[in-house]
Image 1: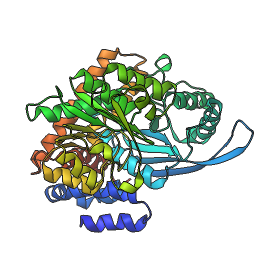
Image 2 (image 1 turned 90 degrees about the vertical axis):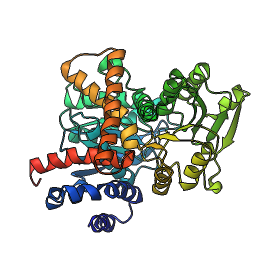
Image 3 (image 1 turned 120 degrees about the horizontal axis):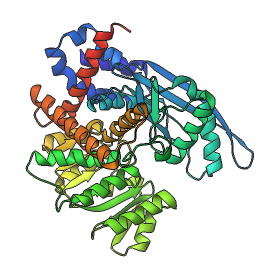
Image 4 (image 1 turned 90 degrees about the horizontal axis):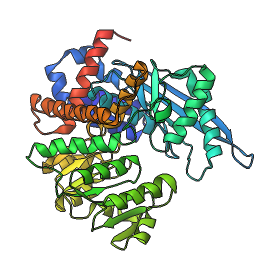
Length: 450
């Protein structure tokens, strides 16, 4: 029956492979749930949960510094609001299309459910590329984007946040235009500056949460990060703060990357080196290859698409923290990781491992934390930012970090508990899917056929 439902999803939107991959991965975990809970079949929950409540697409015209007009596409996928207002990031990247945003929105629904916070799932963005654009050009684009998006969002309807290509600068420009258009100051976006409604720990949250989840997985084997060699991909917020937390917990980070390639530093990326990376990427907006120019202990390897695998994942290590983008670990990469001694993988990116790579991890019996559970720290802290905005309060850094840690422990425990209850102990993929699904499904049934 599940295969028939999945086939109908594919037939309806045949050119959306990323979305199909996300749906298939969740559906594969739910067969045993439908057997034990036939009411989910009766109320057609799978058919309904795979179809967005609303898909918004619009034109975004803007003028560059030379006076030339450009036109990009804007999107917002309002996937599911059964447990709260839509919540999910905005991504500005040339690869953005409906398939990628629907996959991200679908994943977001389950991730948000796992946080225990009352937030639904959505995602949005544009095929606009902020790289190489001036601050004025980015501002003009963001203002034009918000001139349409503002009609569809609000603090009790849909609360976007940042994602790839959308950081503090972009959130500021988007919020400023929303405030002007609506003539109100509300918590309509998260990831805001701390001076105007933002939360402590928000930039760090996804990376910190990713490591907290890995820490809980390691605890199930009476282990810790102390002395562990860690492979990290990416060099944005997630990778930076995952590395920071690993260092704090006694581990050693030896890799980071960007779209041009990766560096391997066998001596380890300590606090000083990480501070250099943060300045390089956040302030200078430079390339990670410059790290190898500064530190003689590092080797830089440029991207070689002809290889069919990513050599970053082919080093001796204990823990892998994929923190870059979707499908960055294929089956060959997963095989390299396992053969090189990696026994714990915690995903900071959204769906960074292909399905056959996930299957290999599960067959190998390693600790594998899927993105919808392991990287939920970002949206969890966004939810905490929404709470602070509603209360007109600002919690301290320690208060937010403690709440984030507690949420990640709860997500880990809920995923592990569900995997045991439904006969797949230690399978965090199935556990996270099931735990997230049941809360949403029961809420949808309570609301009737809407």
